[in-house]
Amino acid sequence: MPDHLPDDQVPDTERPLDPDRAELANGLTALRRASVLVIGDAMLDRYVYGTVSRISPEAPIPVVTVEREVAMPGGAGNVVRNITALGANAAFVTVVGDDVAGSDLTALIGTQLKVEPWLLVQGGRQTTLKTRYIASGQQLLRADRETSEPIHPKLAERLVRIAGEAMAACRAVVISDYRKGVLAGDSALRIIEAAKAAGRVTIVDPKGPDYSRYAGADVVTPNRKELAEGARMKTDTAEEVAAAAKALIEAHGFGAILCTRSEDGMTLVMRDGAVMHLGAEAREVFDVSGAGDTVVATLASGLAAGLSLPVAARLANIAAGVVVGKIGTAVARESEILAVLAPATGSLRKVVTREEAVEQIERWRRRGWRIGFTNGCFDLLHPGHVHLLNQARGACDRLVVGLNSDASVRRLKGPTRPVQTEGARAAVLASLADVDLVTVFEEDTPEQLLATLRPDVLVKGADYTLDRVVGAEMVQSWGGKVFLAQLLPGNSTTATIARMRG
Image (cartoon, one colour):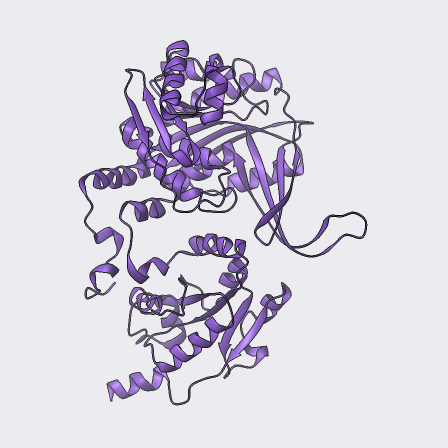
């Protein structure tokens, strides 16, 4: 970034933090050196997106025209995704079936960076598969396929043995129990005992009313309903949550309980009786699915990095606030948590990564808004650019600008370009009212970015013909439109630079 940006456009990493937030920010950075072992029930979450334009003549149900499908690890697999999103390392021990869903899940986990996978296979077992059908931002149906019976006893023995061996390289152990059979019987207890013997901290995401299955765990992370079931006590108020947590700590020898209370935040209760209530951090709530996985992942990563339990819990609370503002099984990234700790003000909030752009676009689509896209180098912004962007914004509800990176501009325009860095160009674009989001791409063309964002409208200048617009056929293939904006004569970046140099 240039050093002359106004105060409200200084990058987050250069903005001073208040003492509490500074401690959290330092703790967040420490997560990069953490290593966490996760054992539990893995699932495959599949999202089928489409449009609904008619009702079936066969029954009073909507007909979904499928446009795209997305698959990602769920359950304990989502805990692993969240750990690596924070920059930490993960080892993952689970069991899948010898089916297509198991194969897909294995491939997804295998391609994740910073993950050491131990995916055991049981013949004849159905891998848990949750398929969600979504149209216009609304979930229409969820279809589940699964086997929830206990895994084979010999496989359970192998799982516990591998978990014990994997602890040598990890400082924290997560037991992610979804009651799908991987942690049936006394497997969880044996893993907790092994972790204690190895001097590792254990974090349990519990399921079911029998908390004796996790006796001796260092931290247990139930939600309000799960806490009520386990303690057989009311948990309507913060005081009742604290009382129920203390009862379970006393009964089962837990070190602490971190109870998630949805829109009311979290309550941390420690063995010595100390209680800390954390207010909810979410600005918007779109989808709470997977938020518990984010809490467990952040808490475990913090403890593995040597943070105190209160600091790790505060980071977990912030991470949960980030993830509920997204759609589907999502993760909270280090950069997003830092943005909460030291929020950017002004227009720089519009400059995002590709992954963040995808998530923001999904939120806009949920509101039924049409997404427009245009791209370019935008080296020296001139009235012609402003005129084009104004037309582009008029053709959609929200406009995303794909900006060529510095390396990409050099390949396209020569070694003397760009005149301004990508950070400066992004900041200038983001300051325009007609631009809603800016994301930088490294490729020479925006095709990969278009395939990822899938805009409803692609905008280029009228100096292009339809057959020369990169990505036109792609956008039209999913029902999008191409809009050729009228140009403002007499404006050219190349000519302007030539005049400046002359």
